Each structure stands twice: as C-alpha cells, then as structure tokens.
Picture 1 (cartoon, rainbow, N blue to C red):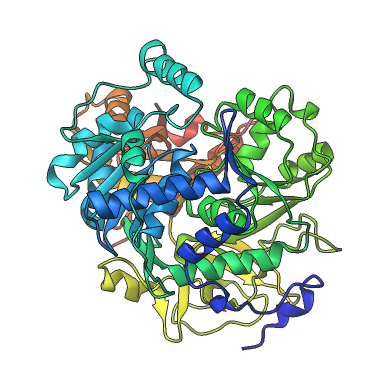
Picture 2: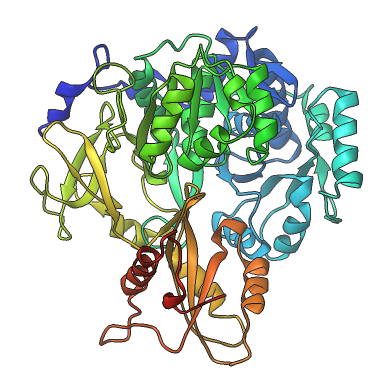
Length: 575
C-alpha cells in the first residue's frame, strides 16, 4: 500500500524495523541487565535497585516458579500489583521462566478478578497484601494453586520497609484482614529461589508473553494474546520513533500503572532495553507526594494521560520542579485537550506529543513527531509508526479515500494473534490480510496525520481507562428494583468522561443510594456511575434497542442550556 505518511517522518527515523533484532522479551531483559548492570534500573519510595540486582531478584523468582512450584512453559501467572519494585521483579522473572503474564488491575472487585483468573486459566498469582482480601473471595472457583503475597515495603531497605508495612497495616488500616491457606510471602520466595538455577530456555517470537485483558471493541472482557514477537516489535518501533531525542541514560516517570499496556510497553520494556532509570510512582493520585518525588528526580521522559498532566499542573510545588532535562512528554490513553497541552508547554518548556494505540496492537500504532516543525499540538494522534500500515475503512472493509471518515484499521508486527480462546470474537475484529479493526472512527489527512473523530462503539473513557456500557448495564440490571438501565458517557472536566446511568424503576422505592451501594460492591471505582438519572422510559428503536446516542444528546443539550455546563435539571431527576 501507499505509505505516503513516510514523507513526514522526522530525519533519522527508519521506515521499518527489524523484529528479528531481539529474539524474545527474555533476551531483551537479560541483555539489558547484562549491558547496564551497574546502572540504576528503578527507584521507588527512596529505594533504588540496579540492573544487576534486578537480574538476581528476577532470576530467583523465575527459578522458584519452575523449580519449587513446578510451573511449566506457557503456564499463566497473574500479577496484581501497583507500581512497586515488586512488579518488574515478578514480571521479568515470570517471562524469563517462559510463563505467560496476566496483568491484573489491583482495583478489581472479586467478581471481576474471578472472571479473569478463570478465563485465563492462571495457576499462580502475585498480589499486594492490600488486595489479598479481594483475592480470597475470588479464589475458590479458580484454578490458582500458588498465591504469593507481598507488602508495600517488602523490597525497601529493611527498617524503612518494616515501618511502611506497619503504618499501612495498623495505622492507616489499608490492609483488610485476609486468610489464604498456603499463601507464601514474596520475600520467602526470593530467598528460596536465590540458590536455585533458572533452567535454560529458548523463547521465540511465536511464544505467548501476555494475556492482556480488554473489552476489545465489544465490551466483553477478553484476553488479547500478545506474543514475544508482538511486544518486541512494538518496543523496537517505539525506540525507532523516540530516537528523535537523546535516549541515553534517560530518567523516565512511571506514573501510569505498569499493568496497563501503554505503560508496560512504552515505559517498562522500552526503557529497560535502553538501560533507563524508572521512577515508580505507586500512588499517582497522591499529587503532592508525586510532585515531591519529581523535585528529587527531575524527569527526562514523561508519559501520561490528559487528566494526570492537568492535575499535576494544579498541584502546589509543580512550578518548582526542574524541567531543564525534560526532552519528551507523551500523552496517550485518552484525548489530549488543547488547553492542557498549551499549559504544559508553558510551564515545562516541553511540547506534549500525542500518540495512540490499543491493547490489541501492543499497544502503540501512531505518534506525533517529537522534533521539527510538526512537533506541536495539532489535535491529531500522529503518524503510523515504522512497519505499521494504517487504513480507513467502511463497515464492509473497503478502503476509503484520504480525508473520509471511517474505521481506523491497523496492520503490523505488533498486532495480536487474537483473543484467548475466543475465535468468534477474533473473527469480528480481524480482516483478511492481517488487518485489525480498531473500533475507533477517524480520518487521515493528505500529510498522513491521523485524527480520531468518534468511537465506533459506545465505550466510555474514564481517565484513560475503557469502560464498556454493556458491562455496566449487565451489572446494574441485577440490582433489585431496576427495570431498565442504560450507561453512556458524560463529559467531565477532571476525568474526561464519567459514567452516566439512566434507570427505569421496577420498584418505585428504588433509591440512588441503593444503586450506588450495589455498584460499589460489584464494580471497580472508575466504572461506577458518577451521575444517575431516573426515567419513566428509555428511548428505543422500533425493535426495542435502547438508543444510547439519544441519551448522550440529551446530556449535551442540557449541558449547553446551563451557563456553567454540566447536567441540567431538564435532563431528568439527577440523583
């Protein structure tokens, strides 16, 4: 196909990458630990570990999994951790042992966690003790045989780590009581694994590396099968693109959770391959603490989402951070607002470069230039990365002309092989020739810059996380007293979008609080309804399908009718 966008590539960026340059993620990890042994790999809560120490700890973990737990190549292990030193140790160790990593959101409810563990067939899990009570509820009907638990302070300096754990457990009460018979501590596992040998293992591009769960374009949680080849390719594509700026001894900020595909590839794996120093932010919502950390370790490379950048800039002390070494800021996960991009540039002196991708693409598909005349906020998601083909197509799969709006489709070595044990769902998104339907609606201009216009489905993006109305409706429809329910996106200045719920009561006594309590028990926080509107009936098509678009239009009309914006009373009763 005509890759006309190549003409806009910044000088030095290759048109294609060689995926065979790195045999597997195991080779990437072990090569980085050998080349950069004396460099600091990660910093967390004042504790730093070198690549040599990371190699030793991950080797011990992998050795324990294979020698003591008896796990075999291809077995699935879930990792349910925030951004702590424990995450790269566990993830690198599991990959070196030939296991498949199932990244798991620590904020999952028991029902959500149970589904993921059962669907993936996970036989082991590493979990932060703060979430062990959730795991305890989810475990009984799963195939998990090995539970490894860690505390926040476990890999910090002994005295500080003990103090951190003590405060979290007994002062702040952040660790609910739990009891999981046979659970092992990560510290004990690492100690037992240290003298053991990690069996020699050759992995290739076709070996599965991650089951990364996503709603895809249909809303049903599925595991995107991302191979070592997919992930290696996207690391090499990203590295080729970001070589526009100096990447030697980069200090990068890991605020986005590493269990999220954007941060996993663009932060953890990309910069490990370069010997970078990753500053792990365990709780990015603690913006005061976040700013203090940035004052200690001035950033050189910063990836985040619109809401994160916006909140940081409104935090006291942000203007005192040394941004003189900041060479690149990349936004992804959700649309970057122009006002946020302008203010970031004003306060830091660095342009925010917007990129785009999706789990099924490992994830990066497009990014804007970091240098030159095109390195400015233009509302686009940028140009397709090296070795990536992009096409705008209609509903039947036919390619559309430049400037015409249709579904964005991608092809390249970073595209998943399919959804785990879901050939029917895979068939819905894969077109002949290896093309992936992304579910995003957009256009490509004559220069090759791609613009997102809308979403094909009705997904809601809350602070960069995808929320699917089908899931929300399925859960809340089970709440006693509900007759009908519909979930749609409502604009929000803090999160970009929030979930708005429209409800037809079956029981007139059904209250807002009852709905909120039910949601709290069954949905992760960002999926819970922010606004609840009661209705006598919901708009439907002549075959009975609820018209979500009509509900969104009502919200938009009501917001426009009010001087301050937001949902107006004319929308209906807003609980």
